[in-house]
Amino acid sequence: MAQRKACDTEALPRIATEIRKSVIRSLAEAGSGHLGGSLGLADVFTTLYFSVLKHDPSFPQWPDRDRLILSIGHVAPVLYATLAHAGYFPVGELMTLRKQGSRLQGHPGRDHGLPGLELSAGSLGQGLSVAVGMAIAGKSDQKSHKIYAILGDGELQEGSVWESAMAAAHHHLDNLIVIVDRNGVQIDGKTEDVMGLEPLADKWKSFGWHVISCNGHDFGSILRALYSAAGAPGLPSVIIANTIMGKGIKSIEGNYQWHGKVPTKEQAVDFIQELSENTNQREFDAIN
Amino acid sequence: MPLINRGNRPTKAGFGEGLLEAGKRNPLVMAIGADITSSVGVNLFAEAYPERFISIGIAEQNCMGVATGLALEGKIPVFSTYGVFAAHRAADQIRISVCYNNVHVIIGGAHAGVSVGPDGATHQALEDLAVMRVLPNMTVLSPCDATQTKLATIAAIEQCHGPVYIRFGREPMPDFTDGSKPYTIGKAEILRQGHDLTIAATGHLVWEALKAAETLQSRGISAHVLNIHTIKPLDTETILQAARETGAIITAEEHQVTGGLGGAIAELVAGYYPVPMEFVGMNNRFGESGNAETLMEMFGMKSSMIVTKSLQLVERKFKNR
Image 1 (cartoon, each protein chain N blue to C red):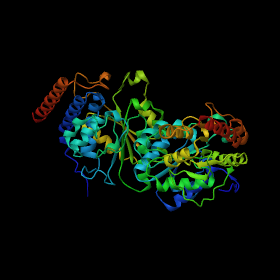
Image 2: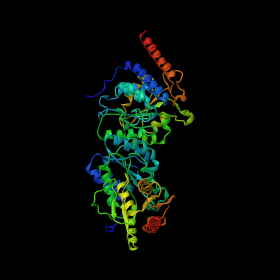
Image 3: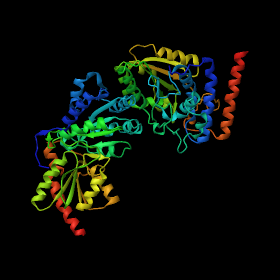
Image 4: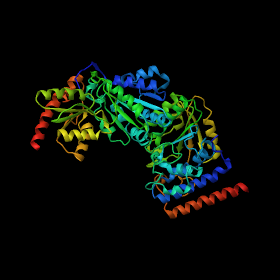
């Protein structure tokens, strides 16, 4: 069967570090884009593509693959880096991000033919609706694949998200799993200052969803949440992944000003060095 | 063609029949409902194929996304709602989810024009053609009667590959085409040959255009009548040929005179063969409650207005020479 072999979970931290480095390199080269959210989601994307999703980079259109819908198109760099490291296209192509003629558009565009990309998206509040449609189609065809949708927490301020949340529960879409990137910040500041979302878990519960929370930077926690999401018959699942914007680079972690900012090439060198040192330190700690 | 009304029928009935027939032929066809299914002609399909009908409720934005998801999975989703809600409430979803992804989603735009009647301005779609026409990848259909709407709906489902908007009305209106000619998307129909001016009409106003042509004939003016049942892609060849042969064009639509059929034809002839033009339609205002016929009369969307403006146009044309 065409399916990528899930990798050893011990390899996930190293892969996530490589993905973060690629995100930093591609954004520094692009000169514009969204670093904070892309780094914050690196561990979730690594876990999905290297341990959980049923997919085959050599057969992107495999009909039985799990689908991943990225609703927050602005964190495209982490999707692109993950797809490249998973083998959908050469890692070197990441350096064309946001450039004219590139398959790596600023926000994902399917018309440019990037393998592994399921949806053109970037206007917030639309991805979950599309995922609901895909999940209904999967149910209608009695398929066993799952639909994963990545949403931002600020994005939940869009009313259309709740239209689709209502529909997913109404149609008992237990083949649909939403992951909310709960980093608590958006462009203007903290989500709770701009437009409060709490009590967030209760909101989803009251809409009829199976709700799970996890530490979005702890691979064990992410994996447990994803396994738990698969075990709620008749209910769609939402994982509120608590993440830190800019995770991995101490000087920018949690700083909302890095939502739509990129490093200079000099900063990129420092950031990549910081990631390498931390990984080496983690491995040293693990051995000793 | 002879001017024979085989009886008044709402064009939405044609949409419902077309959807049912295409659905019978192809199990991939699915319909999405936003509460108003019988009002927009989807009830026939929903009753015949309940397993292929998805109720989403009063949530047009979500409906467009759900349709996109279904289409990405190889289904052929048809979502019908009032044109005002399709074009405006869900405009961003149509632009990004439907059109940027270039998926084969069929959007039915019901309640076209002031002939919606008593419901008033909120429910009378008068800007939908303008909104849909500017979107890349979108095909825009505006058939003239119930019989043609059925053919257009089947064509949208069976012949297109990308997004399609198909517009239809609520009030019973003359059903005058006989359905014998195939509906060719992008090909205007020449309903009457003439040489003094061209009346290019769409939707309900095609019937009015034919009536106007008869009146004009009695006054010695020979009108060439085009049924522009596809607003996009526009049949540039037929329209430019008409411009060359008649030297004047009047457009007639149950829509704002800007941005819809009139706008589309003005853009075309301005670029390739400028001729004097007149525009029959809504003039930069909202509709209101009333009887369909009276409202169309009041807002100048009956044959009488086409005749008046045609006479002015022909006069302008000869003055310009």
